Amino acid sequence: MSGGGDDRPDVLNHMEIEAYVEALEKSKTMELGSMGWLEKHERVKQLTVQSVIQALSNREETVKESLITHEKLKVLVHDLVLIELWREEILPELAKHTLTQGFSIYPILYHESTCINMLETVLYHPESAETLGDGIIDLTDYCLRLMNQFITFGNDDDEEDEGYQRRQNGSGDHPKLAQEVAEKDVDIIKISRGVLFGNCFKALSTLRYIIENIDSLGASLVSRLTLSSDAPMLLTELILQKPWRRENWQSGKISEFDPTTATWKEIDSSAHFILNRNEIQAWLGLYLLLKNNQVLGNYELYDGRKNQLLKLRAFLNDLSLDQLPILGELQLFLNQLAIQSGGPFAPSKSPLLLEMIAPIRNALEEEFKKKRKKLIKAYTLELIEASRESLLEKAQKLAASYDFNNFEPTLASKGVCANCSKEAEKRCSKCKKEWYCSRECQVEHWKRHKVTCGN
Picture 1 (cartoon, one colour):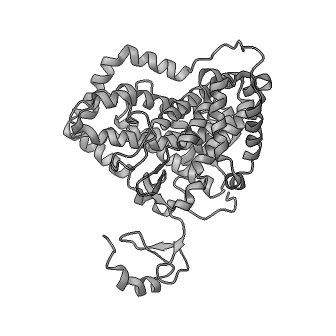
Picture 2 (spheres, one colour):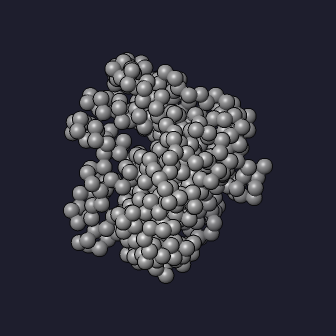
Picture 3 (cartoon, helix red, strand yellow):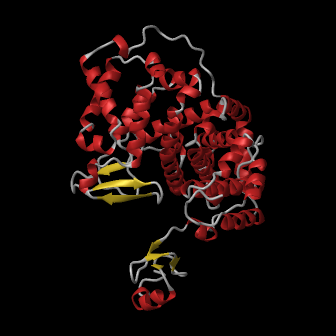
């Protein structure tokens, strides 16, 4: 049933959604890259596209409901953590080889993006987080690890302008990748790094949704965010560092990363003080943490933390408060913090809480530890040294899976007619860049458009 949104066609019908969700199972054998796994990846990708369409179109979110009903959200967290561990432990070994057939590796990296994209979409609803059970610990830990990674990311290697202010410590690559991968394999490094950077934006939103529901998710999560990991300081550092933005001190140009297109785009200097979506997510996450009595009761604001938080006062001005009025409460908190010490801003006693392990990550680490050599050999045979027939079969499968022309009617939004500037629903079938409201406008505009069409 439509909720009054647009009329984009669905990728999956209700029966297909139910069938795909029911078929989602945790991979016990870790056969990433196999044909069976590629079919699962295709199903998850289609479910993700459908869930985003439903969310954007204000429709009944049947994908989310089905994932909750069949208790499959934890499967997505399992896949997320599995590929993260694979990326850390196995990819550096595979990258030592000449990756002439490295296309088999790309879907594994993109599956991580697909899973975090799906989780970000459905976790907007509080009931989704509540159905994860102890999987919420694994998901929170994953997001926090990516926040640490987010802070270390600097400029894209494609632009080596020394004038760009670098905000990272180190290269931003995973340490093992940086140390063990040869220069000839730089493509897989750049792809892995680019995918990971995009995942950080999704993880930031997901972390904010988790924090928003912290009161209903148990005391173990509070301990995770305050004692095991210093979430308030992570979010503070993100706001201060702004890894999604880079500034050229020589030219005065400012660029921001657009996660939807995975590119850096130059913005007007006047937009420097405009809060983008990522800053808003970080500010909201920090605000929700510092206004929560459970969090403050477990979080000692000693001088180092206090001084770091007080740096944020420089960003809380009339312009930022106009954009996000809720930050006025945070400004008041920081002003009080500046003139007081101890007291209500520090826990009265050290909390004695049992720390809950991350069950999914812990189990996978044990399995990787026991089977490391066997897994490396199996992945080398499957992804690097596979037969020509096997590689051709995978290539055909991937070509069909990533043919986004199949999703064109679904993903397309309305545009502006290139000829008369009216609202348009059709695009040039050749270049798919220009919009037209009618056949007549397209014919009339063709003399100008044919110069650039297809270029």
